[in-house]
Length: 227
Image 1 (spheres, rainbow, N blue to C red):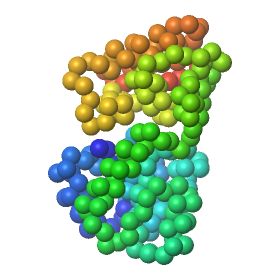
Image 2: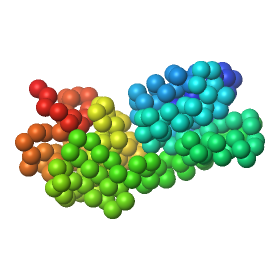
Image 3: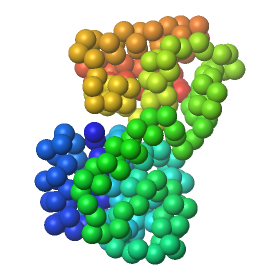
Image 4: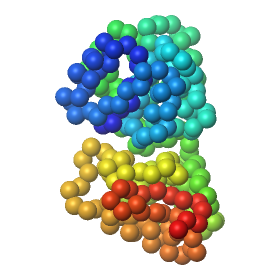
């Protein structure tokens, strides 16, 4: 699981690394609010651990910015020393998914992160994703391009959903595999096969290809003609 920690306390950061990394987590860290926004929007993470009290933008403003301005669907677990109903409601109102009050149990943090990620693979902030002439309605599982319905396999649907949430940014092969298959991607070259299947439905009937491959790196969607 790939988690971004937005926290300025070096002792807390060290504790999180010491506990979570041996459990198989991959961790990134940002030590202030502005860096947290940049890191969250510049990479793909399975979840974000966000401290409420931060230099620069505080946790509430970071969460509001990620949800409102960037439509980021990544689950957010907010950490705070303030155990009041008002603070909790404020966090949830701006888009936090869960809340832990310091001092907290590291096993509970681990359990909550895993629960958030399990739910996020089926629920997203946006029920309808749109990019270029693509439209994906997660509520009914319908995908269309230029008004024409696309019949996708379940895996191709998950790949396209991930690419649309990231678009127009690149997703590396590793990021896309993790998004589609979680922490247990297939050993074979399954992703290449499913990309081929998706491209046949998404691009072949249309004049302009949208699914671009960067050989050896990954994939991304484009809404414009590119060389």
